[in-house]
Length: 226
Image 1 (cartoon, rainbow, N blue to C red):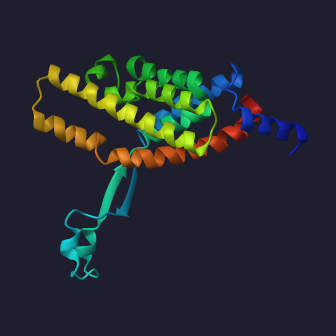
Image 2 (image 1 turned 135 degrees about the vertical axis):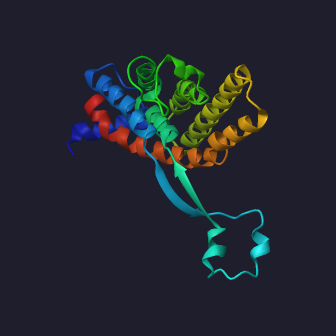
Image 3 (image 1 turned 180 degrees about the horizontal axis):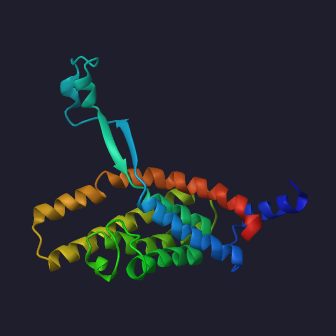
C-alpha cells in the first residue's frame, strides 16, 4: 500500500467524509439500485434453533426422536431487501443512497417490473408498497446517524431506527390501503404477522451485519470514488 493510499484511508476513517459528485459515485449509485433489484428476487432458506412456548413440556422427551427435534427447529425463507437498503445507506450516505432508492422506485413504477409482485403505477395500491416507500426515510435517518462516524454504537442505532421506520411505515400504509379496500381484520393481522412479525428480528440481525460489511466495503472504494 502506498503512503498516499494509506493517508486517504486514514482520512476517511476519522472524518467519515461523504461521497463527492463524481462519475464513479454516479455509477456506484446505479449499481446499488440494481443491488436492490437483486435482493428483491433473492431468497435465503435456512434452519435455526428456536425455543417454543411449550418448551418445558418437552423436558422429559426423547430428543433423539426427529419429530421432537423438529419442534425446536424453524425453517425460514428470508428476502434480504432491508439489509440491502441498510448496506446502501452506509456505502453511499444520505444523498446518493436516497437517489439509489428513487431510481429503483421510479424504475418499478414506470419502466420495468422490479418489485416483488411486478410493477406499474397500480403497484401503489399493493399492500407492500409502503415498505418500499419507507426505504427513503430509512436511508435518510441511517445516513444522518452515521454522519458522526461509523462506530459500532452508531451502526447499531442506525440499524434499529431504519428497520423500525420501514416496518412502521409499511404497516401504516398497509392499514390505509386495507381500509380503502374494506378488508377484514383477520386478513390484515395475518398480513402484518407475515411481513412484520418475526421478520423484524432477522432484519435487525442481517441489517447490522450489512452495515459492518458496508463499512469495510466503503473503506476499500473510497480511494476510487471518494
